[in-house]
Every structure is written in C-alpha cells, then in structure tokens.
Length: 131
Image (cartoon, rainbow, N blue to C red):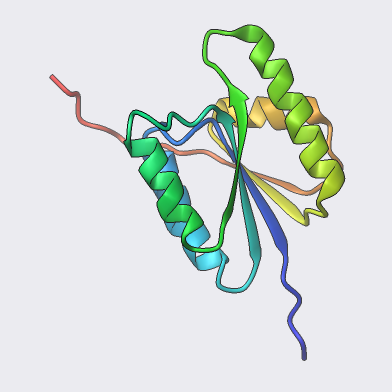
C-alpha cells in the first residue's frame, strides 16, 4: 500500500508567540518526515532580533516551508495585506489540512473562509513570571 504525502499547513501568529512556536518546531520536524509541511507566520519575522529568525532557519533546515505574511503589529492595514498573501498561497497550493495556533490565527483562518479541514490547537502552558 503506497502512502500519500499530505500537504499540512500550520498558521501561527509569529515566531515570537511564546511556547507555541517551540511546540510547532518540534511537531513539524516529525510531520515533515512523511508529509509536505508549510507554516504561515502572520506577523513579520524580524530578521534582526535574532530568536524568531534563528528559529525560522532551524525549521526550514527540516524541509519545512515558511511563508511570512508580513503583518506588522499595531498597523491594522497590514492585516488585510496578510489576508491577501494567504489567499494567494491557498489558491496556488493544494492543502489537505490546516492547523491553527493561538487566537489570532484562529480568527485569521476563519476570515479566509476556506473549505479545508481545520484543527484549532489551544496552547495552555503556565509560564513563570519574569519578575
């Protein structure tokens, strides 16, 4: 029996989203062994700050495609631009399943109105206060 590779698309607020992006990097590493995996990052990846950019490069080294949807937090019209980029992505790629992470990505995906099965992941891990 021949196994077919799925096209899995994860949508996340950004790579500075707390523990969600670390969970996502582990999950997609294993998914990419038997599937084609895409990650849409709603918020623009900061190529200067370091952590989010280095995490992106680590993820991409596992043959995972990362697409930056270029939203700039606090700039409301960039959200519309992000929707347009995402619509084009979904028009040009056959995606079998979408997995969203965190409330903004759930909302973002619902606005797109796609007819693709969606799994909404809720991340609920207690974090120690920084102070």
